[in-house]
Amino acid sequence: MIKDGMIDEIQELKLSGYSFPEARDELRRRHTKVPCEKTLRKYYNMDAAPDDSHAKVRKAHAFDEEPFRTEILCILEMNPGCYMSSVYDVLIEKFVESGQYEILPGNEQTLRNYIRHLRESGQIAAKEEHRRLYDVMPTPDPGKKAQIDFGQYDCGDGLVVHFICIVLWHSRLLGVYAQDHKFSSEESCRALHRFTVKCGGRVEELVIDQDSVFVTDEIYGEVFETKAFKDFLHEQDMRLWVCRKADPESKGCIENAVGFVKKRFFSARRFKSIDEVQRSLPA
Image 1 (cartoon, rainbow, N blue to C red):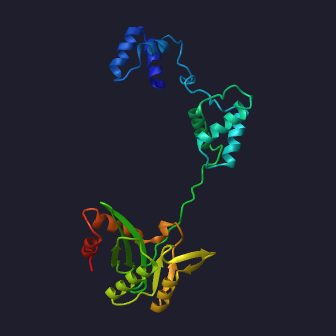
Image 2 (tube, rainbow, N blue to C red):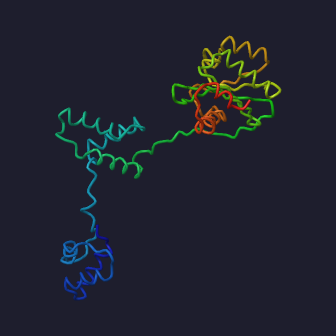
Image 3 (cartoon, helix red, strand yellow):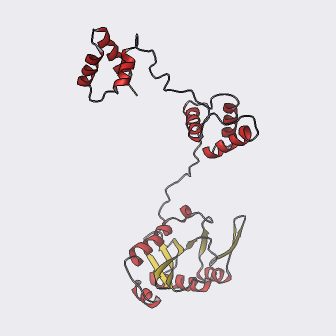
């Protein structure tokens, strides 16, 4: 696309008495990039530079006419998060398949450009972004909280390791216990007991995910623990904090702990048996 400034230069050279070949050569001397000869001749032969040299290039928005405009605005207002391809399909159903029009005035990309124009010009409201609000959680005192989660890692040759991660919130001390099958409630409680023995004391509160190992159900915020886990909490005098279901961002440091074990422990080691895994984990 030729720039307005160059069009003015062509007209100035013409008024100064330059022939077309002379004007062309002069422009090539002044600029490293010059339009083709056909374009130069077109503007040289004009009586004067046009007020808007790109008027023909800037085509009218194909969908900016009734009834398409009103229908598009209506769809976007009622469905602000819809896909543009879906809007195009609705227009085809309403206007083409119904027989009102033979074809739409533009293709799907034309519609995308038109909707972008509507948003940029403020004719429709921009999509609202509902972002989650975060806050800094203070580090609890020593012995206050521990968090638990489960992971698994495929070592190859048919060996799949299931492991439980237990993290102290204050010190970030990590305990990992592994076996070759999924943890049951009783096995999880035994791992927790081993961890408390290793630490030399019990924490006041356990933070867990809504895993079936610990929780049988949750109804209107009321959590129902498995019998073995409920008895363990009562015996150890521990409180319970249950994270939201299917919400990794509410699980805090434990999500990183599971990834840490997979990347830093398992990824560079080869194991043939679960005994090798258990011997390799820190006691």
